Image (cartoon, rainbow, N blue to C red; front, side, top):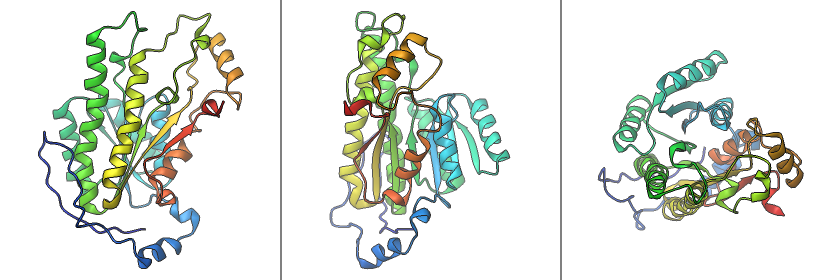
Length: 300
């Protein structure tokens, strides 16, 4: 695997994300490039020996698919969300398939809970190579613009954006110290374009404006991480999935599939390849990107 020079940095628990030392940067010399060039393309996709955390990685939608994809690629996978029981049950199912998986507990946006998750992972595994941020606080994403209020927006900002900031703040230190890592944030097509109100005609569904706010902010925060920590061996990218089929009203499904070029909604298998690609050395020269897994939604 591609190696990077390592540097220990200190970070206050409540302080800013540490900035890289521009006088102590890794050398991307010919020997390092040769090491990568000697790997086959399939080997570059392997995550063997890597430790990956997927927040909300036992979720019934594509969170579980993200975890399965990383496990299938050889990673030791940790899933974490507010339900310890659900995560442990899901991890047990992955272990039954022969994968190395572990379930843990944390509450997005709760600094103490996030710190405990960080400490538990580093104590048990000694490192984290891949951080996939898939968790979302649903409590802050209800109603349309008229129905929402300041309390809803505070929950969305503090829980989702604040929670994303804090978990990245904690684990980026470890990634810099160990010489590299990959952060993959799960955004959305609605972090790139606004929603199409005609999709919801004939249903009682609405798209909360807080969701667009959070997902758009996630994309640019990812670019920030990429620009500051690329020379420290840490890559940061986004995946923006399209609409996930979740037994929505048939009129919505019909409207969506009519508009999207591939003619169907996202399913559980569609996101696996994207997360493995961005987590692995197959994407070693990619950072700050937002990979659209949207069936062509944003190309028209």
